[in-house]
Image (cartoon, rainbow, N blue to C red; front, side, top):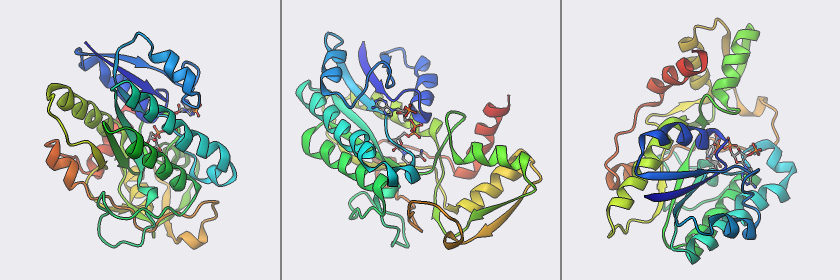
Length: 290
Ligand SMILES: NC(=O)c1ccc[n+]([C@@H]2O[C@H](COP(=O)([O-])OP(=O)(O)OC[C@H]3O[C@@H](n4cnc5c(N)ncnc54)[C@H](OP(=O)(O)O)[C@@H]3O)[C@@H](O)[C@H]2O)c1
């Protein structure tokens, strides 16, 4: 049996891994969130893994509120960077493979073609900065690591753009949504399946040596306006979506205008076929409404 520790398991991604875990009998999962294991404490992590013979840690824990991070710099750094250093340290000392999740917001958005893994990070705000710091700890401390940068996560769990649009779409006659920020939505269910698939490949191949940084989102490119319009069309809400510019939308954090991720590497190394973003919205809405 291969033992796997999941941190932050009550969030969007952790919840999807939890749902999918029943299909993976060869793995024994230890699902934890902050109540069971606060990753900010190095000693708590060391104590938790004692006698559990953990082979993988999947870190789904993070400080993910991009706007609030601008005001809670210290806490964002503690969770997104310092706590990740703790996990990397424990993983490295115990021959554990660390699968860590990061973000498209490590990039500035100056590109006009999809970002490859080796392109220079230049975060625009506290969230992206602290997530990049966390990545660097993983790369420098724990050789056996997989970092997956993803973008615009949504799921039936927690708070996300799709759920907000579904709710507001019922309450309001019209909504203003930004049309000049372009990226790709990622269904957390698809990312969770990919992580489990990657773990299976690594655990079946003792010579695996393609550790490193990867990009994953659904296929395709869209703006938040396109995403919102598709959500309204799929859910058959009558709410009208108005396309506005970022300069007319008040928020605390600056966001990249372009954050599309190039997924060639993950598709090639792990032989993946990735669904298009448009095709996944229906699946998620069905789970929410049923
Ligand atoms: N959401 C997005 O759009 C997005 C986009 C790109 C990348 N990502 C990355 O994808 C990963 C998963 O994101 P997500 O949306 O699933 O996140 P999420 O829903 O915010 O879940 C994060 C979980 O971590 C928990 N947590 C916070 N501090 C913790 C601590 N000290 N110890 C243990 N658990 C702690 C949170 O608990 P509380 O809720 O109680 O704080 C929450 O249950 C993150 O690394 C995130 O940066 C997300």
